[in-house]
Image (cartoon, rainbow, N blue to C red):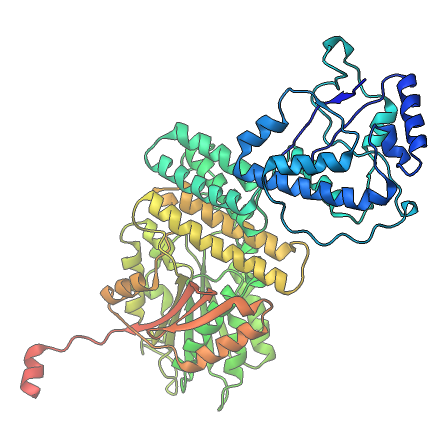
Length: 595
């Protein structure tokens, strides 16, 4: 009786013939035939194959050729091959395996790819031969003959045999069989790069839906963004999370308009604390303070009485360095007066006065004559010129040997907030002009988050804050930090509050209205100020400062039209500029008479 089996081809992989055991009598008959063969391999004879032990290497080589020929044929003619080998026709086990393989190769009519010359046939003892595996198992029960009633499941012994390799572990057949088995399993592969592109597209599409007031589409996209963000790591995941939160706040309005939330700082002390951690974790504020101090120090050269007005006093971290530089000035330090301006505290504490006491102690230790005044103002637009001037600065009093004060006005990330109230910036610049300062230092974000449509503002903010988060990650990687430290974590919260304000708020609530250096140049020019070039000395020292900062390789200092910018790789992120009050316009008639 002939024993039937089904052919199975999975994904262009190996083809295997499996003949299960039926009844005990047949097995005995087969085993008896193998014993009579003498040189015939016993294990393969048990399965109905007559293969001499000395021919095993040649048969294995031909099976490998058959496998590669079928893969090549499947590539060129999948339908014909599958219909020929994967049909419901019952194929019969060949007794002469070597001759049968040759006939199949000739039927495929595809010359096998060249293979390495098989090694000389080793002795039968070199192989631990076991039945050929069948992977994966057939979808239908194995069939004996053509009677559907004779369907039986493979015995435990058959299953055991199918799991064992029939050739040495080093053979290519074993590797290809394992690869075919892995390819047959359903595997879901997440392409992080593709998911990142989809994430960016979803963010931009959500911003477009918000601009068009299509809240239903925006709601669906926000949920998709949250899912896509989980496939990302590092800076991209964090940035997407903050922008998704900001979009959700804009869509759902979880708090009433004008209430407390990311749109308005619920605690000035908390914001100051975040500001301090941002100072520690990255070089942006250090660069701002250093370049502004350098410009102020050069403007105060030769002056015996100097006065600095700081529009954002906070913790006063900028001024110890300037005090020390003045203390080392040739000829002795000047008399130094500092006016610090800050917002009111929710607990009505006098935080500005505490900062002044600490600076006074430092000034006393380095023998600098120091005076300090703190002004609490809800807005810089509430200031008047008389509040900033010394009683003796206008020549109305003071000792006979005293000279007028040389005034400098300093603003670090403060002026852009005034753009939320029409006319507020013009009012403040008019007050500054009335003080007649020798120099005005301005540090602002190099970004445009105050013009165009919401979608344009969103796109610009996405690129800008992605670069800043990348710089934070780069600094952490440079020091080999595996975990995010508290400084970086709170710096991300600091930036996340800005993102929320840019995206979720409108009107007077949206205070993070950053503008580019070119835009500030136009505003200062219209307000009556001329640019003061920042010297090359500041550029060199700023570059040296970055070299000392961990992760400084990615940061770039550039000089641009007399101003200095600090960026991450090729993207400028903040800009320092210096200004002075423009000279009065000369009367054309008097100028003509003079000529």
